[in-house]
Length: 104
Image (cartoon, rainbow, N blue to C red):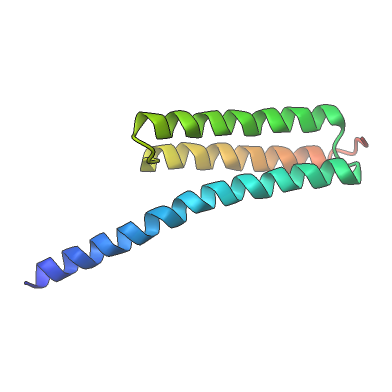
């Protein structure tokens, strides 16, 4: 009986955590797109730099779409880790290009 209750509690926790994790992927993509737009608007990013960053964002969207297609619309934990790594690299690239001293 005790293990049944613990199993149900674990399943409920997992079920609530999965949509939150998927939402954070989308939210991070949105935040990075806003950072790129602000960099262009402020002049910290040149048009070429912004185009390269947007291309990275498009690549991330394609990776996500392929991963969801392969697994019936669900992101596996492995796909989430891959995407998180890509997002982290993109974030560092945004920072690096916004602070490289070139003016757009």
